[in-house]
Image 1 (cartoon, rainbow, N blue to C red):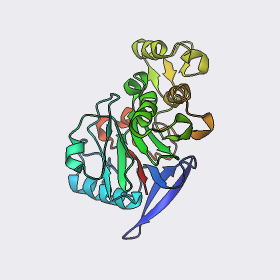
Image 2: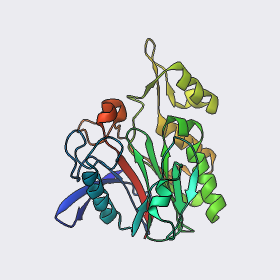
Image 3: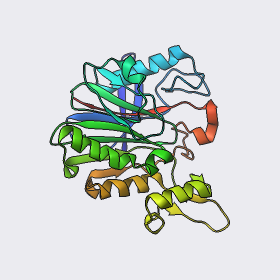
Image 4: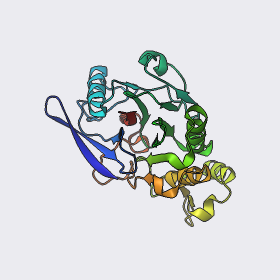
Length: 268
């Protein structure tokens, strides 16, 4: 993945982590902490309202996101760590969608931006090169165990007639296997969801320490099982917790003193 810097009115630069695997005809990105107006500890591109940041700053950050996305509107849902995915379109009011409990959005309408909020969880964007449909998904460990990546593929097939081989998928910055230590209950949940996971390096066991989980490796296996070709899957190597330049928000690193980033996609 690479960083694309988008200049918005006022000369402000908004950096976005992007993937070359997402085809032409779509704009997407994973925001960082830079490019916004929020004061510490939410500095500066905090896109989450629930953490105690000045709402006027968050509103302005969303205005900048809208401009950077190139969308006519950017929709979001109320995330609950599940696998419900809503089909949305131009006629949907942002406030209505924001009140829906879901962890994914999909559309085939041009100009409709789809977004998910994260601070260690994985933001996933999908684009279909044949139908023009796209999706944005939020996958924490619970959603990953429940199969969010697989459900995303199934939803694109059911709603838009996509074929898995036509999907291009980007897994954005999230907490990496280097830092995501888990207890026995979470390890067992991953092992039960995919018994082959330990052999594929998803569950990393270190003697004398808690096991670690590679969320993106697990999600990649789900995508492969759903029929998405490996060459059309791109996974960021960035860890939101230990990034040396502190580019990302991390709930594990800062708790409620953090903010949230966004993963978005829009059909142009």
